[in-house]
Amino acid sequence: DLLVVGSANADLVIGVERRPAAGETVLGSDLAVHPGGKGANQAFAAARLGARTALLARVGDDGHGRLLLDSQRNAGVDTAGVLVGGAPTGVALITVDPSGDNSIVVSPGANARLAPADVRAAADLLASARVVSLQLEIPLETVATVVEVVRTGRASAGAGTGEGGTGGAGTGEGGSGEGGPRIVLNPSPPAPLPAEVLAACDPLVVNEHEARFLLGDDPAGREEAPETWAAALLARGPRSVVITLGAAGALVADRDRTVLVPSLPVKAVDTTGAGDAFTGALAWRLGVGDDLETAVRFAVRVGAAAVTRDGAQESFPTAEEVAAR
Ligand code: ADP
Image 1 (tube, protein in one colour):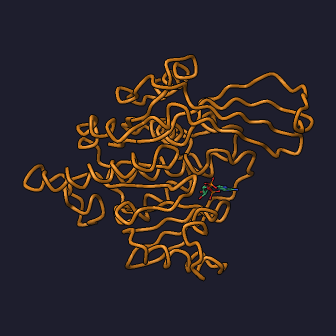
Image 2 (image 1 turned 135 degrees about the horizontal axis):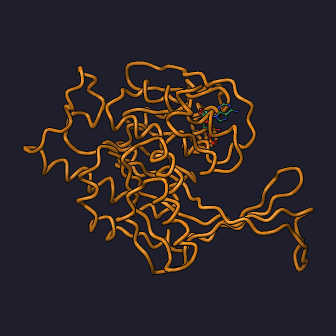
Image 3 (image 1 turned 60 degrees about the vertical axis):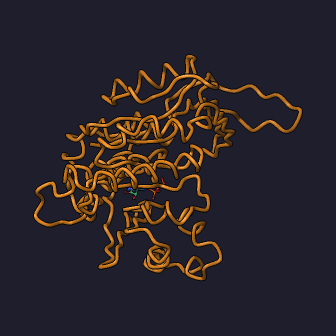
């Protein structure tokens, strides 16, 4: 149902008393190695909830790559689309000080080599998905190629499968009835987006920081009201917009309405990966036919659960845990 196209990183974490200055060496805690990267996190979150999920990504032919493949497979993700080799697996070198502040160096490695040609070679994988979820830790040209392949595949499948109907009672949301997969994009880390990419997003999923970045010089970005950001972002062309608001939940907007979906009150322990869990859950629910607001109502529960435990992937809930809240 869901195809995630994106990054897979090994997060290498060391606790330090303080960060080293230039030329200095400090001793830190034992090294912790965690599977991460926004693409891998989203796929993991969805699969853990029970979604039929595939990942299109690139890792190195190395131990970190094997760690990532193992964790995806253990969660139930179909990893046939994960390409191996070309560069070392992407890593994030993370130091955390006693106040919880972190300093991070990312080496994109194999993620930077996930190329447009890899996407074209995976056209069947794209065509068989109901939702394709994207982020920006892979080259922007690769993201743009996914959008192009989905759009042209849609055009050439025009007389074909008629999947878009899905028998739903006229929700009219999934894939807009055109038979191709629906595209969900979380533009993170934020970067300027080509108009064709923006126009394909349904929804564009942003947090406050990404919303303000995309709005740039637009005066709407200097306002404090997320409704204003949503309206200004919609004017850029996406079919719908979801703005995540941390403990306040998420705002859902399309041309017809704007709705604030509150979060659940929880004791937040570690918000790492909450946005990825939210977006993975949202993309999956859209793929199985929920309308956007219903999918966001589910996703905020998943995001809330993810902040109650330490870590990223290891904090993501099962469907039973979400239902129990
Ligand atoms: P990001 O992690 O990308 O910055 P947010 O902080 O907006 O994104 O969090 C994404 C989602 O995770 C929110 O929409 C919400 O559902 C959930 N969430 C995050 N922080 C909290 C919190 N403190 N309490 C409850 N839910 C939260």
